[in-house]
Amino acid sequence: MLTQQELKQQAADAALALIEPVLGPDVVIGVGTGSTADLFIDGLARYRGRLRGTVASSERSAARLAGHGLAVLDLNDVAAMPVYVDGADEIDARLHMIKGGGGALTREKIVASVARRFICIADESKLVERLGSFPLPVEVIPMARQAVARALAALGGQPRLREGYTTDNGNLILDVAGLQIDDAPGFEAAVNDLPGVVTCGLFARPGADVALLATQNGIRRLERP
Ligand code: 5RP
Image 1 (cartoon, rainbow, N blue to C red):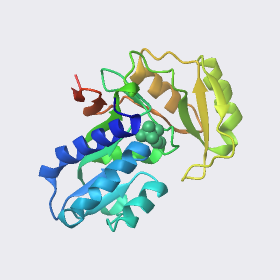
Image 2 (image 1 turned 180 degrees about the horizontal axis):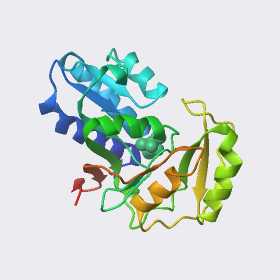
Image 3 (image 1 turned 120 degrees about the vertical axis):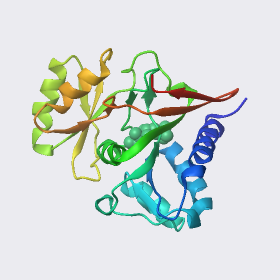
Image 4 (image 1 turned 60 degrees about the horizontal axis):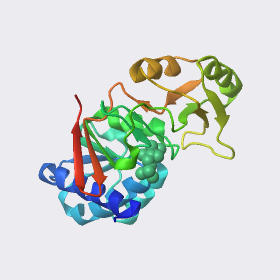
């Protein structure tokens, strides 16, 4: 029986095998945040001489990449990336995701938006029928915290401030419990439309292009329908 850590390692290794053919001296890889992304970063170190560099979705990942001697580039200096590789807190069969358990949702969404393909890496426990059991992270401008919390409650959620936490962008996170999200693109748009919200952790417009989900029987690969 493989541990969750071993499953995460398998997912990270599968992503490295998938991106290996696209590596080259001009290639920049978008890199996510979290414990699964950390394993991907550690593996990417083996390919150090075979890519131009990376764009990180958090200060945490930037430090880990730099620690391996991988170049970390400013997104403003990068016009295109073939892939963005990151984990998820929940993913469904349509490859819609909840992300932001690590608080990096906004930069993750920005870097992913510049990449041609989003490769989601996770152990199979992240695959759900319906998104919402994992509280939805929402990054908010500090002055809007209470106003956004009231609006999220009106949308049916139970928002709770992530105590003592500030994002890399100097903002706050509200974690919204009690949601059962049937229309992820619609709910993502509704939350992102609230004044004071920077972005929410729904990644459905679009979601991932490919999910590499590690199971006890090997990698299960899902493509966006
Ligand atoms: C960070 C994220 C992560 O991808 C998500 O929390 C999954 O993390 P892990 O790989 O540690 O389970 O969105 O903001």
